[in-house]
Length: 185
Image (tube, rainbow, N blue to C red; front, top):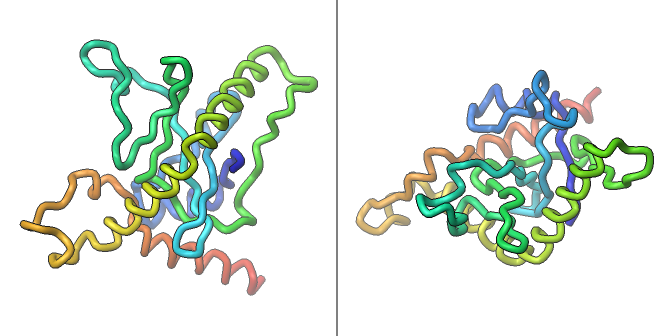
């Protein structure tokens, strides 16, 4: 697994179809970076799973880090929350729109080196959770695909997080259109 970002043009393109696609923060970036994430394979397509910074809502009322959920995987090292993966916001992405993150510290400022250290620690945690992440990404995908299939849901109960999950099927169509439009130019 590796860390990457996604081009602004592609994020803008998908956002026009599904408002739940996370913004790339084009005009308001920390460390001059858009969203960072990992790539996994799902349904034969590369999917970008975004990382997110830690936030006060990631802790319970006693100050403990919340437990992983179906859609959020917390990256914890030595009882310190580093960040989290947002599985419900994963998006299909063509390889041409992925930009690898350079984790080389040579010639970087002290702030950039701190950020690179954080990314390296997050990547280490992601690699240690690889099987769980892939399994849960596939499950989130499968449940979202069957969101409207009444036979799939006992007692018509559907988890609330489905509403906050991007529409994978629609985004896969947009993904294919993007590739087609680039191949025809």
